[in-house]
Length: 275
Image (cartoon, rainbow, N blue to C red; front, side):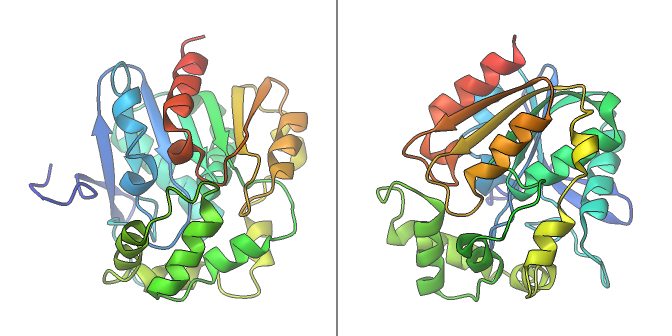
């Protein structure tokens, strides 16, 4: 563990040809949490309110995915669904995790979905929150997220897009996230991931419907009714496709269910995992 005052930098482990920064807290059956794809995002920024709750009786592991946060950025990397799924596989193997519950948020939902399809025996239960993974026409909100150009004003607008509750969107939060987005290497890798036209990157994160419909896992699907980034349609489609699925929709909630309804979100996950 690195001695650092930055809570986002914790553990580092070899995953293929690069080191992955990851959180690893608590004891018990493991749950692996995969973050979304906002500018300056890290596993800690995405899951900071949820990890302590789940870690009361679980081992909680949350990596920075390749191109995000404090995971190494190898030169010449080509970002794709396949390389992120492979990173998860390397992480499971390096940490000797035979099986885990898997939680994916937005972009991370598509990676979790694809991982469960590729390695079904490594996943016990699956949670998809505001998830990508089925075809949809890119929203204005997602296009703005992926096309972010660093400035405080642009970050403030994105915060308004992410959250339904304006009480969460303060100038202080926007300034923190803006500063996070301009750390060395952060914006360079982020802008390389989803260049325009961006519909192709939505399409590249899709898993085949026939493969989704063959998933054997109990799956909890969560979405915010007022989500402006990923349409509720994606979760209803996943709910119709996945045989052993349940769908929970939070009202008065945007794309940040784990932040806007953090206590309810944690209880929902714990109840689902403990069924």
